[in-house]
Every structure is written in structure tokens, then in C-alpha cells.
Length: 222
Length: 222
DNA sequence: TCCTATTGAATTGGATCCAATCTGCAATAT
DNA sequence: ATATTGCAGATTGGATCCAATTCAATAGGA
Image 1: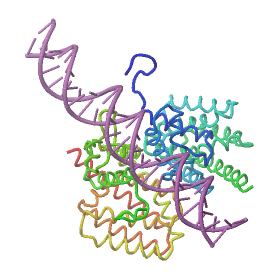
Image 2 (image 1 turned 90 degrees about the horizontal axis):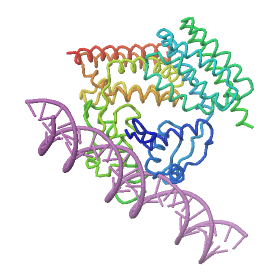
Image 3 (image 1 turned 90 degrees about the vertical axis):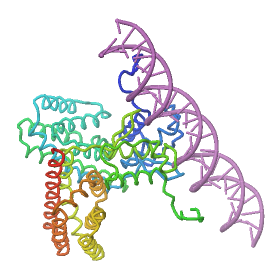
Image 4 (image 1 turned 120 degrees about the horizontal axis):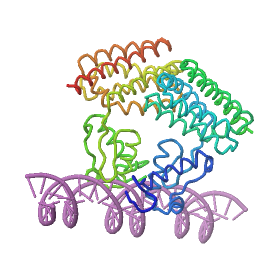
């Protein structure tokens, strides 16, 4: 609670900062699959010792974003197409449930923020921000579900495929389709039509999954 | 790979051992909710420094089993009835999917092991082992689903309510009902009736959940 | 020339020590 | 008598150092 300078309130621990940075770097694609993550190098980068780096890497491994082998270092996890397909199927099961519950309880304020998020996503020109805005839109829609555990699991699943989701949006008409589908989902929410919102969410996920799988099999197979 | 003494093969890291021990102790109820977990005390118990203990506690916190506050120590997480109810609802959504897929692919060997696990559970007299045997039975049934991510999520959810599940089995007729429902589920699997197996699994989880919630509201409310 | 044993660099896991912060109790002022 | 302030003990997060292990390159022999 130092009043001097920037850090009013709770000072985040170094390992938490490093964890967030690494996760964001992996999700954004700045760290490619198979990229090796040396504790020492990361520690120097953040001007800390290897201890908090190690804790961050342990947490990332728990989440499946990196793979560590003792005495051999950590690398960004390489995900198989089967793995990615499974996670999309998982999301298609879970997220319709979440949005259905959320729609039934959604406040006017949340709905207004969802509209803003939907428009911000549709209007954004910079592909580097599409991933974040996409996620922000969905996060807003799920906000009022009153199901914290579901949300935690959904977010963990999203973290695992975020980098691929971002890549998929940049594809040919991935963004166009996402714009259309987002609008339809939002309108269903605005009408308080939980069943339709759930169905559209499911279709949205399955569409994106199919497009992504096609892209990956094409690019990896070649 | 030291040939001297006990540790042939891969030596598990100390933090992994401590993590497993603490998790098991929490799940078994040896560490009650609210019990404080001092790094120093645990370190002395395992004859290690506080570093691996800290990493273990971080992982447990990530899994929601403990709550840590800086400079104030960690305590075993206290779970609200709402939280527990949510996790049972979550399991009721997920596990039927898993068992349905698994039944369609189940090998004869797995089915035989499931029969053995079912009988071992039904025959066990020692309440202290019911929790493990229960989980072993379900794990065997889910084994051939070919959905590693689903299984990981299911296991994480089970870890979060394991101690309560164990408590529920020891209740009045919790064990009797579990025996009957397990047998029914197993028979559906043996008939390759995926739809029935899924429905029975869902009912099994919801039944256990209701019984547990009733018990908790009664014992906590009083 | 080719294959194998050895040695040193690289890398991680853990121990010990230090800095920062919180809690509780006692001393003091009003 | 009560509230406030200061100090000591307790507790955690991180830095530095050490031990254990792996990998690659190199020297030696057939």
C-alpha cells in the first residue's frame, strides 16, 4: 500500500506478473509452439531470479500451455489437431449452457455493455486486437450466469485454444462470419431468447472449430 | 536413476510429492476446512525447504483447494453449499457425455476391470476406502472415452468435491444407493447401451448431489 | 573412416539466507 | 479507562548459491 508512485493497493507478486505475461505472449502467438523457455533467460528479461519464473512455468504447465522436462527445460506446448478439436467440442457443450443461464438473468447494464462489445468487435480494423475483443464480447455475455465454476472452466478451455482462435479470425472470411454470428447471438440475448442464444452459440463454436480444423490440417499437412 | 536403495526410475520432484500428499490429505478430510497451512511447518514435516512447499500450495490454490493471502498464510478452502451444488451440476452435464463415448469404444478388458471395480466397491467394509474405490470405478468406466481433456476437467471437478463425496457415502443410505446405481450403470455398459448408461450416470450424480446438499444444509445450518 | 567412452557446458530442482509485511501485545498519552 | 503508537515475533516472497542430471562435442581405439 505504498503511496509513492504507481502501486497503490495490492502489489502483485512477481510470479503472477510473469505468469500473466507469458500466458499472454503464448496466446498472442509471440511465442511459437515448440519455442523453448529457459528459466534463466526469462528471469533476466524480467530482472528477477529464477524462482518466480519457475512458479509461473509450473502454473502454465498445469494449464497445458507449456511442457517441462526435468533438466531439459520447458517449451511452449505443441497441440495436436485432435486436442484442439476436442476442446472445441467441449466448448460447444459447455458454453450454450452458460449463455442460456446468463440470458435469463441478464441485467440491462450488462446487455448494454454486450452491445458495445459487439459493435467494438465488428468495427475493429486492427487484426491484432480481434482476439481480445472477441473474448471480451463473449465474457460479457456470460457475465450474469452466476456460475463461477463454469466460467473458470470455460476460461481455462479458451486459454488453451486462444492463439488458434486468433489465427482463425484472421483467415479469409473468419472475421466476417464471426461478425454476423455475434450480432445474431446478441440479438437473441436482447430478446431474452435463451434457447436461441444457446443454439447460436453452439453453432458459432462449431463453425469456428470446423474452420480452424480445416485450416490446420491444410497448413500442417502441407 | 540411482540404483542404490529405493528410487529406481524417475525420481518424483519433492514439490510433486508434497502436492499429492496435501491434496490427498484434504480430500480424505485429514485437513479440515479452514485449517491453516504454514509453509514452515509443512516443510519441516517433509524435511525439505519451503520452496517446494510453496510451489505445491500455489498449485493447490490454482485448483481451488486452498486459499492464500500474502504474509498471512494459506488455509484449506472453505466451500459454500452453492459452490458444491454448482460443481455437481457441472458433473451432471459432463460425465454422461464421457461415459456415452466410452461405452461405444469400451474394450472387453476394460469392461472386465469395471466389473471387478464395481464388485470391489460393493464388497468393501472399510468406510475409509469407499472414496477411492468409488472413484476407481468411475475412472475405469471413463477410461476408453478417448477424450483426455474431458477427463482432465472431470478429475479436476472431482478433486474439488472429493472430500464431500466421501462424507456423503458414509451417510445413512448413501452407500446402499451408490451400490445399486453403480450396478445399474455397469450393466448398461455391459449391454453397450450408451444412452442408458449416460442417463443413469446423470441420475447417479444428481442423486448424490441432492443427498449431499441436504446433509450440508442440515449440518451447517444447525 | 566409424563407433564408443568421457568430459564439460547447460539447465533445472532445492537449500539457505535476506527483505517486506502483518499481527499481537505492551507502553503511553488523553 | 480507553484509544493510539511502537516494537518484537511470525510469516511469506524472492535472491543467491549448490547439487543433480542431461546433452553435445571430442578424444581414443578398432
